[in-house]
Image 1: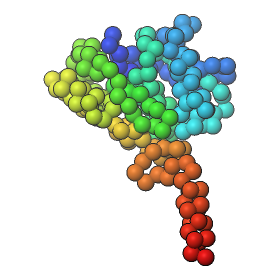
Image 2 (image 1 turned 90 degrees about the vertical axis):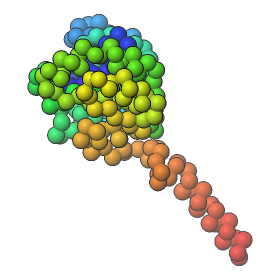
Image 3 (image 1 turned 180 degrees about the horizontal axis):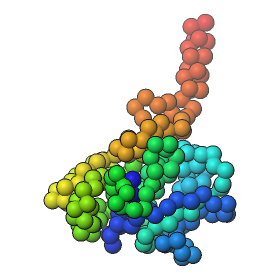
Image 4 (image 1 turned 90 degrees about the horizontal axis):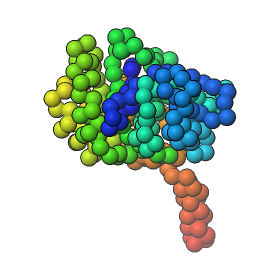
Amino acid sequence: CAVFIATTGGPVQVLQLTPERARQSMVCVNRTTNVLPVSKLYDQFVKPGSGVVEREFGPFDNTSFRVDVSGPIDTGNSWQLGMYLVHALQASSEHRLVEDITAADEIIWATGCVDYHLNVTEVDHVAAKIQATGDLFSEWADLGKPVRVITAAGVNESDARDAAADYGVQVFGAENASQAGKILGLAMAPKSALVISGTAVKPGSGRNIALAIFVLVLAVG
C-alpha cells in the first residue's frame, strides 16, 4: 500500500517508517534533517502511556521511530489515522508500505484522529482535503490504482462521499482503528483491554461485579 495523509494543502505521502534508537520519535521531510514540529505530537502518539502504537504493536527493540513524509503536516491530530495504519502495515507479515506508486496494489488516503481507546474521531475540512487531492485522484485512476478513502464514520464519511463522488474512489467510514485496518485486509485484534466495544468489560467492572455478589451473599445470609 501507498499511504497518503490528507491535508488542506494536498495529500502528504508517508515514504518510509524506520525504527530508531533515539530519545524521541520524529517526522522528517524527504529524508532530510528537517524535523517537523508535529514530531512532538507523533512521539506522544507512539510511546507507552500517552500513546497507542507501542501498546498495540510493541514491544519494540528500539524505543522510537523516524517517519519520512513527502511534505509538511500541520500540527493538528488528523494525521493520526494514517500513521496508525502505517504502523499496522509494518506490523503485518503480509502487507507492506511502498513509496513507488506504480508498485502499489492500492492507495490509502486517510484523515482522522485516533484516541486512547482506538476510536476514530472526526476532523475538520474533509471536503477541502478531498478537493485538494483531485488532480492526484485523476492520475491514480489513469494508472489503474484503486484508491481507498478512510475517515471517521458519520459526518466525515458523508462529507467525503459527497466531495469524492466524481473521482471514482472508494470511501469508507471507520468507527475505530480496528475497522480501519480491516478495510486494508489487516487482522487487527486490539491488545488493550481498555478498548471500548459493545461487549468489552471496562476496567474495574469485574471488581465491581464481584463486590456486588459479595454484598448479595451477605444480605441473603
